[in-house]
Amino acid sequence: MIPTDVGVGRYAPSPSGDLHIGNLRTALLAWLFARHTDRGFVLRMEDLDRVAHGAAERQLDDLRALGIDWEPPVVRQSDRRSFYDNTIETLTARGLTYECWCTRREILEAPAAPHTPAGAYPGTCRNLTGAELAERRAGNRPPALRLRSSVQHMTVTDLLHGEYTGAVDDLVLRRNDGTPAYNLVVVVDDAAQGVDQVVRGDDLLSSTPRQAYLAALLDIAVPTYAHVPMALNREGVRLAKRDGAVTLADLAAAGVTAPVAVSVIAESLGLAARGESVTASDLLTRFDPALLPRQPWVFDPSSVRRSVVRPAPG
Ligand code: GLU
Image (tube, rainbow, N blue to C red; front, side, top):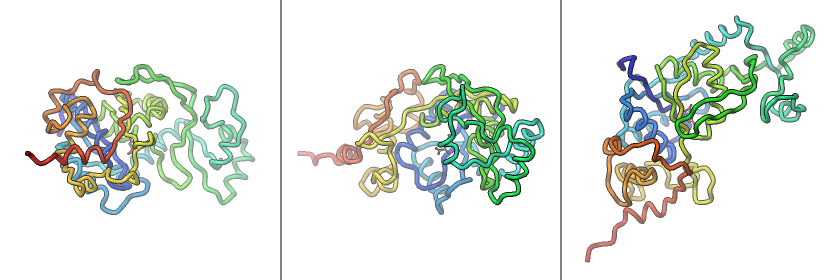
């Protein structure tokens, strides 16, 4: 058990496949941020969407192999449906939700509502009349459920990005296939796991104002955020498994063991010299968030292989 006064950090992967070295770097950073501030550290499998067979277990093995530790239990979102439903019911009882029948295409093609930020839901279904509602409910298409938001922007504070202001719209709480939406479950689960520090890839920074708004509505303290730079491939595109030689299993097959992978990640973070061998716990004493690189990390598998294949002596 984690004492409640120390705070908790987390890593929340989606078990849709093996973690690649960019995911592992984010996980190591989340662990360093948490442990360096004497926080607890917890994991959560975000398994409401596509799940690859055995991926959750392989992800845990890979995190362990890097020297990342956590407090049990590992939470699985698929076990928590009733908590999400209860939260949605609470918001509905407060008059804060409405049904929406818009398709993705209709949303894209709808004229932007005045004063609505770019990319925000234009509010098409927000104020349907009783007759319009009855007509849509009689159709075959099940509705999504949206939040009736009363702000258009919110500012959050991020340890790396400073004050960040982004759009808050009538975000989806439950998709029309019945699945609770990411922005809702992340807020409900972080609160349930006692998380007060959220470290994750900076591709999620723009979702953060929506999550902070939802947290405030639910009387949940907004966590401290740190959105860390992502890993890119040599073409400057976000690293993906199809780039090859990016998972721990691929790297091991190329002679790059998990301890070497830790050292490669540490070097990319400015926490180890080139070729220096370090462990995750060595990094705890070296870690300083203020010195973290702010640029994405370009990962080149061939340079990593070259760095481990040392020339024979003599
Ligand atoms: N499950 C998300 C991912 O794997 C991360 C969500 C979060 O950290 O809030 O990208």
